[in-house]
Amino acid sequence: MKSSTVKYIFLGILLFVLIGIIYTNSAGEKQAEVYKEDFGQYQQVVQLIQTNQLPQGIKALEQLVVKHPDEYKLYYQLGLAYSGQKDFDKAALCLQKAIDIRPALLEDQTFTFKMGESLYHIKQLDLAKAYLEKPVAEQFQAQKDELLQLIEKELQS
Image (tube, rainbow, N blue to C red; front, side, top):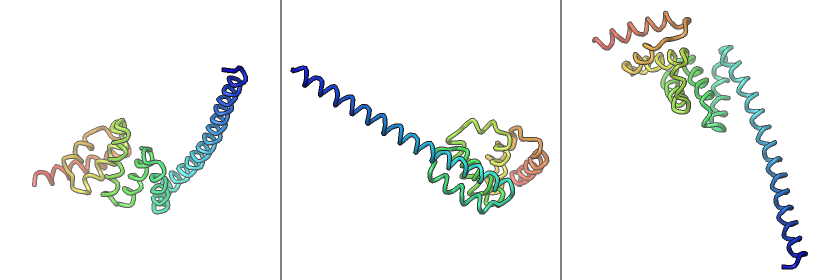
């Protein structure tokens, strides 16, 4: 092969690699911008939920879940919001999805209480009892004890 042919092949490959690097960098910056926007929206959603503006928070979380279906925090927050609205069927489903994605949530004391509470209200008593028998955050202890008593009564009858 002639040296000029080798030179052109080398330059072609080099140009191809440079174009790939530039494209990858540009696409990465766009993706980072989308994640920043979504994270900002997530922070606003958490504020809405904490200030009891649940319908707006739920609507925004449902949009984020579509964009990021593998993000357990979204399902966790959505479950908490549904629980706050007393929609325990949806709360239990969302909280279960959060566990499926992140099993370590079973160690989260607030999570275990909210899951147990939701399961109690949809009459999955044995499973609710299993969650509620785990340690819970101090703020939920009285409610936990009350729910466990109610579960025991219902299981005995």
